[in-house]
Amino acid sequence: MDGMACTVTYRDMPLGTVRDLNSIWRDLMAHSDADTARRLQSDAGLRLDEIQVDGEKTTIQVYEDTSGIKPGEPVENTGLPLSVKLGPGLLTSIYDGVQRPLPVLAASMGDYISRGVYASGLDEKKKWEFRPLVKKGDKVVPGMILGEVAESETITHKILAPPYKQFEGELKEITAGKFTVDEVIGKLANGSELKLAHKWPVRIPRKVAEKLAPTTPLLTGQRIFDGLFPLAKGGVAAIPGPFGAGKTVSQQQLAKWSDADIVVYIGCGERGNEMTEVLTEFPHLIDPKSGKSLMNRTVLIANTSNMPVAAREASVYTGITIAEYFRDQGFNVALMADSTSRWAEAMREISSRLEEMPGEEGYPAYLSTRLAEFYERAGIANTLSGKKGSVSVIGAVSPPGGDFSEPVTQNTLRVTKAFWALDAKLAQRRHFPSINWLNSYSLYSKTLEPWFIENVSPQWPELMATVMGILQEEEKLLEIVQLVGSDALPEKQQLTLEVARMIREFFLQQNAYHEVDTYCEPKKMYMMADTILYFSKKAYTALEEGASIPMILNLEAKEKISNVKFIKDYESELNKIKLEMDREFAKLI
Image (tube, rainbow, N blue to C red; front, side):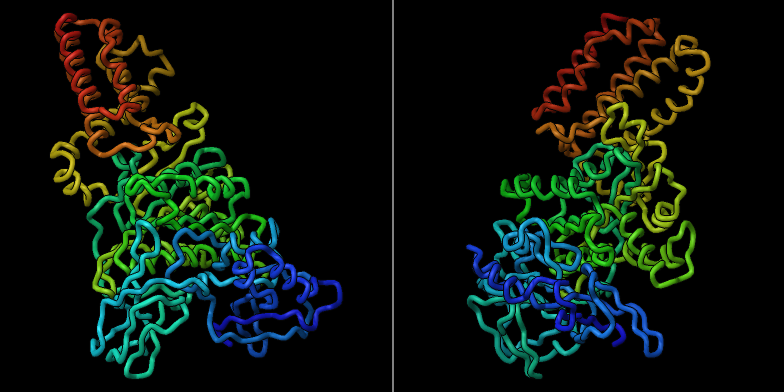
């Protein structure tokens, strides 16, 4: 049974420990949505995985409540490790940690899921219009594209040959038409049958032809991310921060506005009210690319903190496997994991039950290995289908008390190249996104400079380096200000503090709930930063020519830069501000 999944059934359970299975089935079939009810199998038993074998003793983890189970319960071997079903119908879906569709379960059971109930991850009754891209006699190799299905208004789903060795050979037949995910669409000469869907074990990375170096940014529309700490497509980033610092809102902003083709959002062990906000808000969001619903290209995985701990541990693997599947079709996928700390806590709990030797703070000794294995499944690659696709992973970390020295944060830092550190003090001052620009960094900046030079401006690297330099200089000056006050500083340093304030308030602060400021394109970022530095250059020149600091600080034009964040026609407005600055400085001098 090594590596195989099993099923515990209820047949020998004591009377009263579970509802009568026949009554459950009658309740489901009586529901108005009969098709939904038929997707459920109420006698499917409890899903579980074998995790340890010691001689005659096998240790299993169950993905549901185990109350009432006793020795002697029958176990059925399914012949597979925990796997997900991959095919048309994934998009717009909302799953739990083991790919059970929550809307299907909720439609028949209400707010609480009965244990032992299973629903297929894909609708097995719905027929999809399949258009083949191969013909009889063609050679089929594992992972190649066989045809297409229009899955949503915005995404055309590529049907892949399962990436297994037996799906290699001459194509004996292929048929166009309407099929369910389990119907045969073609056959190989060796007898292997091709279908719209196939299964893949969640803990095993899907194969690619070649991994590539990331050279294109994952544009997020957030100025502090794209401007100062960019993330590459196929890159990995971490957002650590204490409670209330804005991790979830930041993750949601990235899911809404990143220029990925597909979004996979994993709510791993989060509070129910936070996941409720995600589940209710996402279906109503408008995709800026298409004007249609954002859910047309989104998969949500909701595994809240009150769900079984084993399912929480599995949820991130379910999410990354779905992301890899869309990458194999040639899509750029952004995966948000909120939060990996809850995932690590699930590992700690399972490890303690296995009586394994604990590591630092009780986490298992293999914590760093598991984190590395997860993040390393990200990347940009030439896929087996001949396309180029990517998976970008952004993991939120919730260190207790905001302590970045705790094991999950430190081990995450070892494997991620972008670190966006949230600061509770900035959040308390209502500065959002509350990313601490002094603690954060991105190792992708140099790699992505050629893209920004070509697509935004040749001055982009120099401009952003200047902005970062001013913010670092401000931090040094603030230490002096706390001792002697700002009036004791030389006039040039007082001007530096003012320019730094403008960068913080006008450029870095961004309103996630404003219809315009919620997203900022790279050109607008560049022009806003350039206008602030234009004022800085003019101000230093005026200071050298005899203007006083109070006179410079009282200029009206510079304050108008903050309003540009909320204006769509930003180019003409920023040009007007520059002209107004020229007039004001001319009068001043």
